[in-house]
Image 1 (cartoon, rainbow, N blue to C red):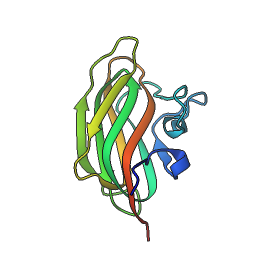
Image 2: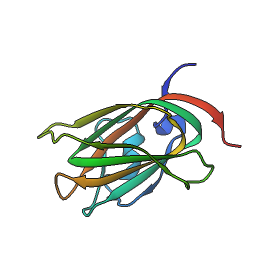
Image 3: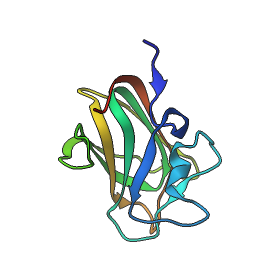
Image 4: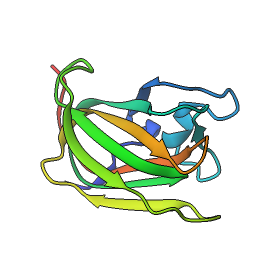
Length: 143
């Protein structure tokens, strides 16, 4: 089976929740495949967003491109609804002045139908997420 970027909206992924939304930088920008678009928080932390795959997937590698994110927690759920999230990955990111943070995570036990990303803290009053990429395969449809 061919590995694909499961987080692309063109693959059926959808951002179903985001704690903040700027009309110029909406949450959908994180998964649109365009490197020039992004989602921005609107102050105060934690901030979070949930990506729905609309199918069961197995994630092998995650790449998050962002600015000013200090601590990121990722939770996953294999439920048919966005409930029963379990802790999966937590990372302290390095502050990169003037450059995108490019956090690559090799995933273990990456079975999910939903991922919840929680930006616990940031290096500034605002943070942005430019892309979320999840390399892996679709295992089965939700039924």
